[in-house]
Image 1 (cartoon, rainbow over the protein chains, first blue to last red):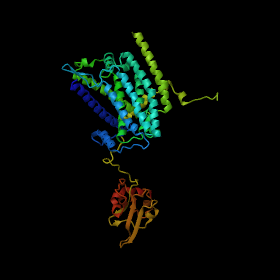
Image 2: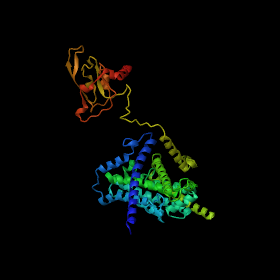
Image 3: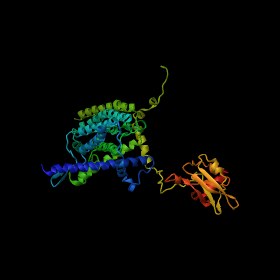
Image 4: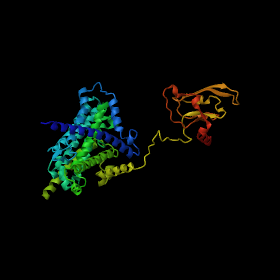
Length: 348
Length: 166
């Protein structure tokens, strides 16, 4: 074992974590800006040009805040919950194939930490479900009614919705025949994006992703009017910051996974082989960067959709949430699998 | 209750309304349209709001070329519901014979009701357009004559407004 085998993953991890944190910080700014525009306001514009450094000012403020732990809280778990949340969120980033491997002089480099994992999709789904531990623990360890209710709601919500989420992804697996995210992207580059073959699955996945990331209209775990702040009521300072950051990191991860599963990943234009059209060599630096830009653009667009939905739709009631999850989305995703199976059988 | 006809919102909905998605799309379209409309925000320290004459800001004393209008009758102090005004009268050789030796308005008590202005027989105390009231300490919030006397030229809008309604 030489140094490079150890050093390269460390560099990769450093890049990924930093890019993720900065992306999450800018998503907070984007959230505030889009919210402001929808409400005919301007939004933060004082810190730096167009308010570009607002998020850093916010994080700096959080660092300077006093870290308050309730006297009756379980200190160990109270401190652990935000760490679990953010760690799980970051783990998902290691699996997402952000860009194809670059071949320079016969040596292949890749930014993805685990580029060709055969069970990548399962790991991603597992990681998003583990994220619930952070929230549930945060709610329970705070020893506060509101926090506990938020944590409980979140648990119930995630269990209900990750079922439909997993099942809606099955349609994609049946078409592509692989759990490997890179294979799924390659299939879509050849045959066109999955969203054209699986529109229902895409809508179900989008709705469940909103629920999994606790975003409006499914943000019951932190419903302000009823639960004060939900599971992060008793968090202050950077612990709160970590929970907040994990939320946004999860949104970006979900968006990227949706872009990979349904919107063709690195593919810029559906049904067109634009890399050959532009005369680029596959796995050369410009081709890979183009693919990365396409994926990042789609993920950013989906993040905008997340924000846009938040500032458009009112929150669900708890029984409506459960009805939608179990009586609508679950049967629909099962029907989607059945129909996909029949069509695939007939085509073969 | 068997023969009672029900006509609920859920029953009146058409199929497309019942699957929600088109209505959600319409809602999203509405918010997207709002994003490109002109903004209402006023960039406060740079863009200041200029109130009309009808605005009731900080009460001030009118200062004419030959001195203040106030004759220290004490009616404003008497009528003030928040007990914010303190007047101490003194005699002078001028035509009006009396002037306020001390005139203090406690801006921490003032509720901007404008009663002092209504009751004043000399039109000597009026509500100004000044709405930027910041004090570093409680003592600073008690304004004496030095900060209350404002030249009459600056108060024309308010005086005109008052004449309109009297």
